[in-house]
Length: 374
Image (cartoon, rainbow, N blue to C red):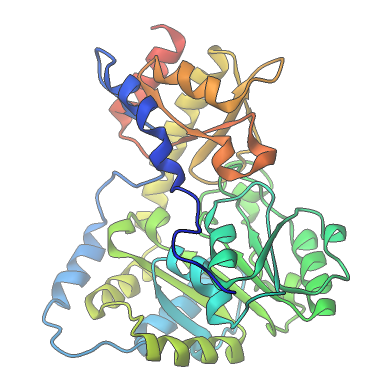
């Protein structure tokens, strides 16, 4: 039997409601760091492109306009160290979350198929496997699934919530093992432009499609990227997948049947966003300043930050003896700060909390003041 309506767990963030109420009761209001939703303005160059394409009476193309697909190809070559990508092997998606959730189903997976995902991970990888009737397997070590009948392996680098970055050698080891198993590898890379620690800050975060990883062969490989984070386009639902031309061609045909199409004006906005690196640098600097301020305040409050080498989050826990994440969530809520509990991201994460950098400068400063007692 496949998926049954109502078989999924309660949406995790719904369970934060009691702690949100505590935080809202703070005399100076809530500082909500529980969800990584951008708060800064959408870049003017993107807004202009959207407005210029507003007269859009006809159906857009599922595969994406040639201009958009070429912009993705150029961006991969310029920003990710992936030259020579085939424009036909690019597909825009309605945000990246829908693609993550639906990929097992779009690939035709079902009962008996195993979908590997990181042990500390955004819950949508698990949900997508369950929706297809497949079996999710949380695992970080290739040896945990090497030789098994695995159909799909999800990577997330930089990782959400822990900010882990996998080296090219680590990615290549996954690719080699997956190819031996006949599995597809999909890499969720939406935080790649937000690296903070070396060697990633100066050397860049490796992509699954990097020749050092792929060996120049993209067979069985898909890289997923979102413009929500780097370009403040969460409201546009603007993302794309690229990689194996045969896999992408199959996905295009299936999505034509389903009507899963990125709106035409959004495609134009994406094209403009991908061609402009300046706004990305500006936004990255905003997050760098907020991160430094919050990082120092957490340390002063006795919280240690693990990993967090890249991305929009700080992965924190109380120093010393282990404390359950929900106790830390309550402690922070009493300061008027709402974070996300590590238990949302798997059993292995139950001692941590995730704090997002996606709040205004004023709210980040307010959080820092409360953490330090200022």
